[in-house]
Length: 361
Image (cartoon, rainbow, N blue to C red; front, top):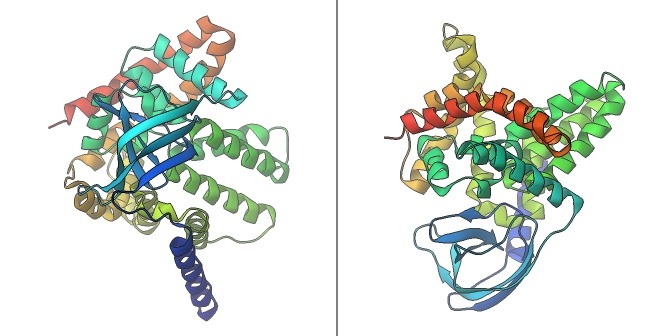
């Protein structure tokens, strides 16, 4: 116990020192020029395109053509944003865009394009969001709806996606390899998925936790979920102290901890609920215990029906992901077959869209 307290204290101290020394200090009125890479999909609103760079909120004109992976140079004046407490750039100018032209980025763009050509909106954007976290492919109206009813975490790549990647790769690779050897390929697969889907905090959190768990298994050591959660949070904050102000980072860890604490207990109370809904309800209720106060304080709203909406749509996600991955991959080689597979997923996407719309009140 004392040893653990000492380790935790040291980690907190290192994070604090890293935060103080590495965090960029911007003052109101400072004119800054930032060169960076876009590490998550820009969010397109009706009047602007939003990205976050170096702990600054940046809004660009709505016709700005930037996407995940691009290298950009932006200039602007730093000002406080009274609504969020996070500083933003005003009088922003996009000085340079260098398009990313790697194999992975081309693959990503081809998959998104295929989804949107085959499926009507918002289903095409929804498929892109669920499979590879392409927030930019979602219409502003539908993305706002998902946030309002509490399922935005489902329509963008999250820990669920990492779990699917791990399950799929492990199930496939262990058919031809020992579990010990398969673990190495699974970790490589997780890293590749991050490069395709983006480096949002929830994805990185799930990727690190899964990798640490596999490393512990491969070395024959017992692993504690709580220890892995603490180590993951510490590693992420030491690497990037700016995540202390990232609501996605905060919600990801709080919801994970809340699920670890309450999900099994809640599932017992829901034993009479049909099995197809039980897991979604128990997981959603458990997560909401932790995140609801944060959402209410941060955004001033909370949808009381969020757990029910999650339960009604979460059961579709594994099937959508399987059909989406197979359809997307096949579509790049045999477009006709890919289209047929994607149309098999359309009833599930239709259900998702209409449940979200139904609870929009």
